[in-house]
Image (cartoon, rainbow, N blue to C red; front, side, top):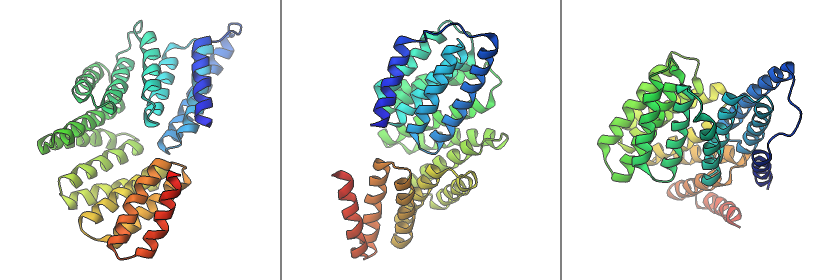
Length: 313
């Protein structure tokens, strides 16, 4: 309900614009600073999986950047809103935010912002299952980034390319493409190790762990997933910790170590419960129930089956 109200506010704001008097130079600078702060807070909330709070901060950033008539800030605000709607599975709204950014960006000569636009566009295409288009668009993002000195952005786009190649590999059951995806994740990791980018670095390790898990190279999978967990714990990224535990549970499942798997799935479920992410709770519970059943802990499994039914009610 809260998310629906936020969406209505966003749409109304975009359509109506700002009708107040032009801001003074002092208020313009203040607005820009407040917008930057809200983008930072929004990204922190996004990393934690709190997408409702992220939308609130990104909407405030959009408001301040509109009042300041700050085009670069507007583009970044729309990109941030787009990635959040994408995480919520609201693809049409994600597309709308990207279109709003594109309308401004067509008169803008910044290759970095154009690369960011193509990166977000590729992520949307990937979510829609348009893998070939996603690959082409992510390639364009990489090309545009080569004309900049922004290494942090390059790491993000390389990781994005790895995600596209992984998606193509899974859809075609082609392990050679998984190896290509690993190269992109490793390239992103190398850049992030030279930067203060622990959040991105944890994500690089997590995805390498997931690829090695699919390739059944379990020692490498364990190394990268444990490294991701350590980094996420260090940064107190609850969403990342939950995802790491779930992946480590999947690793234990492959080894038929059902008690260890159940422990990881339970930890994952509890965190998703605190974060109020019902879809993630369902996934964790399904895996937990299976592990408990395999471990002959049928009474515990029954308790969590009842919880799973409650989520579907």
